[in-house]
Amino acid sequence: MLAKPLFVPLKGEWFDKFADGSKDVEYRKHGPGWNERTVYAGRRVTLSRGYSGARLDAVVVSFELVKARDVPRATEIYPPDATLIAVKLNVRR
Image (cartoon, rainbow, N blue to C red; front, side, top):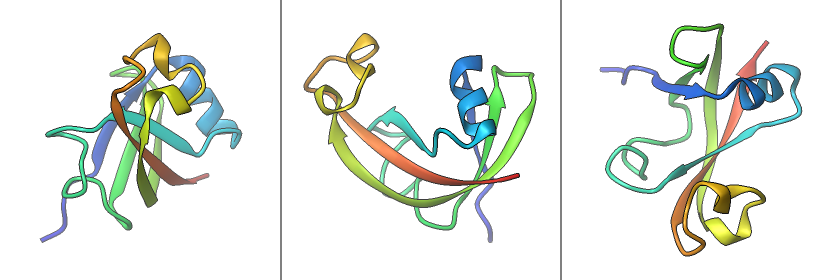
């Protein structure tokens, strides 16, 4: 059975960067919803501008675990020592 696409609501700034091709990695806090079991190569993803805005279809290419301190602007949201999952996406345009 195929897993449902991951639903990823984004601020307009980040959605627009995926839409124009200038962004291809999404960062989320590693945990129960975002981990090696839920995020894997080939999994479909629905990127959404907010919760009810425009949508983009994408597929997970790869992922890696990183520290928030190593990701530009991540410490605006997460503590520096937080472990994040960096999900590389192929957006279908």
